[in-house]
Image (cartoon, rainbow, N blue to C red):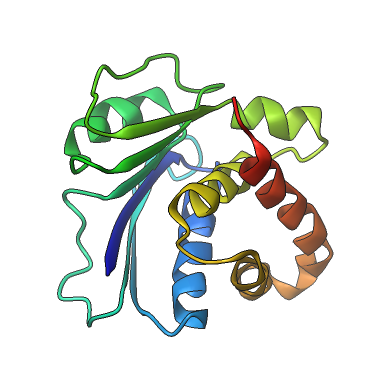
Amino acid sequence: MTNEIILAGFGGQGILFAGKALAYGGLIDNKEVSWLPSYGPEMRGGTCNCSICISDEPVGSPLVNEPDILVVMNTPSFEKFIGTVKAGGKVFVDSTMVDVTTDRKDVDVYYLPATQMATDNDLGGMANIILLGKLIKETGIFDLDTTEKAMGKCIPPKKANLLGANMTAVKLGMEYNG
């Protein structure tokens, strides 16, 4: 089983962090993993994305051209990547930041107001983690225990106190049924 994933948005939205958390989750579950970041020279405010492969087999290439799973946190990324998702794939959209929808019927699309949910729950800057929670619930890519261990690996030691807030954000995404 191979999951090819693209996460995309603006720099500063935590796209690369969320991708790294997925990659660590795969490693913790003894999968073969690749994580390939891509961002413009602007970084914060510019567009960025990352490709993640999580597989039972060795990963032949870290490039993801046709993802099984897409997470988008801005309209330019939605417009750029929505047409690339494989039929039968899953798409997770921060509907607070993306003001368009797709008419594709061959993919499952989950619209979450993740940025608004983060703000409403005093979890500013954690919309990415709310989307990650929804992805984990809908794909079953790994369980909550693996997710917590992966978060622990990704959060720098000086911010270790944020593990609880990150797990709250994961659970908010998992519980969202809108």
